[in-house]
Image (cartoon, rainbow, N blue to C red; front, side):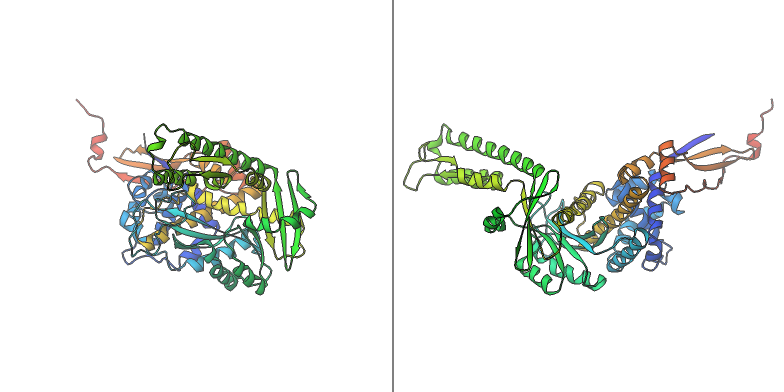
Length: 511
């Protein structure tokens, strides 16, 4: 007896179970028909999505390493040909057309499976960068504001809409230099076309909606709850000081004021204040020390005014908003640089203003009958979309992108989106049946289930091959029970002939 080809089975099986639970075969069978040469594009797509969810990496790695170490061929009834690098890339090229239809299909499935409603939608943007240079004629790869702190790399911007439970409703890939405020009108129109106009609340962070877009939303009877830049807080400061605080949670309190057809909610959080205060103190201390070192340079007199300005520019970029708290005096053009002509001090009034705002953020809404606690609870739902971005970038390795062609870039993000759909589906199932465990933890447990080939020789020179997945441990068996999942039967045996041997070779040798 021999044991051969240990390979990952449990996580692959779980991914395909989530795929089947969503009924994705019903959708994709209409859009991905087999090629004339017999390539089953649906199984290729399943392989790409499963790989992205379980062990995200490049298509080249999938072809050279991962597919052979997995049980995807066994589960799909395929051979290694569906993981050829050319086949994988050709499948990516087929994915651009049905995106809008898929959004509608998934929305209906989630509504049926989990009773998801679309009365509250969360909207936000993120970016993902490339380990490649940009060319002038490229549509998507552009330099822009990087949320990954990679301003040295070209990027694309991704706009995402999710429900309050975190289920993705739609997304759009845009050029990397797209400004946040320009994206909203187009998305509003798309969502209204699919889901209708009325009885929907849009929740967004500050920086996305403009005054003009909010005005149009009011004109179209669209409700919103959005973050507001802190500059607005200064304008409303006198009115807010007159209002009493209302406690909505142990460490959170709010003030409300009405202005025309809107309601403004000033929110104060102890936790946020402590975090912002710590960041401000650290940055201010670091900036003050660096300016002090610059002032005490031994060769200060040798530095020109332009060189000093360049050094200060570097410090300003590093300091961010803290720079505004420091008053700096540098020499006039007719003065020499010295410790007397280069001075700095903390502006106490500006420091007090910043201390006053620490821990606060301002919300605005056109809802007229919302309770303070309810409005605040709804706004913090934005953590769901932040979590979606985190899982896309960390768990599913959305970044960095190595593809060069625009259609491949969009296909890469599309596959990541499908993998996230599997993850959020498992997350919701776990929430209902096995609360307290994350989908990633479930996936890691199932990764321990392997498949192995058991080779048994027969008396007539043939070999019996038994592909067998390992029996689940107690914790996995409990998860299967809680999630209402049932393992399939073990695969049927295979017979393999050994051409170099015949029956006579197996007979005992005589003297």
